[in-house]
Image (tube, rainbow, N blue to C red; front, top):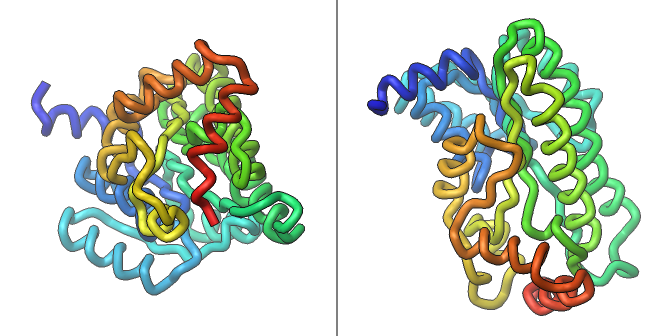
Length: 266
């Protein structure tokens, strides 16, 4: 299948607009660019209006697609919902990439940061999936991409709230994949390993974890797997790691291994 024909099929299935939540930089920017390259119009949601608008201008100019930059705090679902409604655009694909990761010993993490992790990582992707799948069911086409993490496969000391919320997204993606598939909607959860984003480099003081991938590779492999779900694990090393931790060792051993990998987080 030629690239242009593949892009046409992709647009027909998931267009005319794709919404990228957490779409101003890093992995969200990589998803936005990969979708614009396929010819989809975009709705980009994030808190940083300046970065968001700069990205929107670049993608619109480079790929000749319509891009709406919408400043939104994804911890506030009600306001996010209002912002999407005000745009009134037909959204055929949602990529929920936004995440908040309180890092550090659990007893030292403020309640507000834990509540924000629950809001950004659980409440908003859950309710946005419900909000946007309604029109998709009516149209009998569409897609949902939920970013999870290898950290969600078992407990991760110093990332307790993050790993727990990512486990939620994995199970949500699996459930929706089965439930929405008869309606023509593709759902996939991406269990990514370390992604070489600015945020990761800032948090991780040691050299990158084994299997670390660029944001561009993670986004591209995830979109190529859409429709083949329910779960994609980008990167051969990460696939082996997930199989090893889930199938070959005890849960206790898996947590011990993850503890060594997250020990450098501060």
